Length: 520
Image: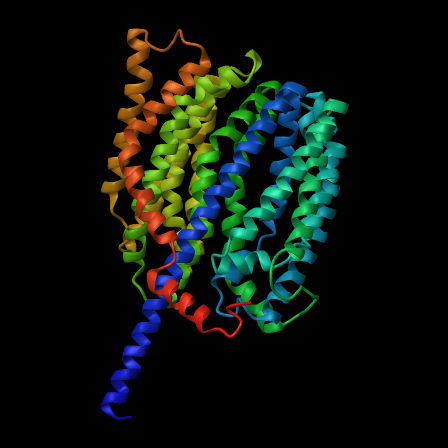
């Protein structure tokens, strides 16, 4: 090849890489927008449904469904071979045979899960009934909810393909539509029956809608039964560490509810379950961003041989800023919100939310490193970190209960997240990812803001005598004021990325003008 031709080829390659990087950045920014929109609407709906259900049902219903959710999630995670991460991370993730083999494995897994859940229903009910006779309802609740798990196993792999390419607009619509349909059925059934049956039926309808819409609304070929041995080998090879990680993650996420339901009365555990469902919103959102945006982004950029340390350093500050603001807002507003939205039976939920939100901050920081570990093929590190949380919770639980009862047990759950973070930071340091100053800076900002909004006014008697609605508004505005300027700056930079690049717009416009059908 002549020198001018080689130079032209090199320039063309560089131009293609730059264009690809801009396109990926644009899709990441749009994907972030859809995740935020979807999560926001989803949590508003979930919150409204939660408040209405609390008025219609008894406290024990929330404890029963917390047990059912923990059992079902445990079975799902115990059988997880990383089908979603496999499709996102594997170079064959767009091949038809690979996708259909993954779907076949998914269906087989769903059949096994439904059968195992049904078999476990009676022993689980008998175990918890020793603490509270209301737990006998688990005999029919678990098999009923297992139907939804079976239906969900037939969802299309097109959902995971969309996640691979960070095309999340239709995925967000599907999730919101499924949630809305399930919530309508749940509330209508609760109003008619005043039974925990409403929550189970809502879950089934939501799973059914999610499955049907995943096949109908997303582009791409439909799934069929297929068995490609090389695809199975790739999935199992990557999935063995994902399996171990998710098994341990189950205990990290659900051990508190399973243990508390055996040690404390179900009405108290029901109040804790409501608090946990509210406190988990912040780490859930950040985890969603980390897995739906950061993980695919890390994987695609690693494919382009970019250093992982540079990728993480660039994405960590906005994650920490958003997480710090949300954690602060939840802590300072928790008790006022509970006083406003729930009756006196649920008053202790405010205390639980504050404690759990402290643990949530540690979990957010850990999640940033966890996405990097997973994208770089270190799923065994994620397993080790989650295992540390489970072990530390078990060690702390007995002395914590002796010290403070259920409140002490909640503190054990929060502190186990801190111990888990210490190991994550140690592992991050081994691959040159650790920079503790951003984490320390935002931790200090959270502590100072909480003292300014909660502790100081309590000492001098400000805000305490206001109606909960006015108190909630004042606390939310103060928290937003502290983070307002950096959040506005971050939002401005993000909005610039959401808009298509100018050259892309010009190219589309020129193509349109040159098209023979432009005037049609």
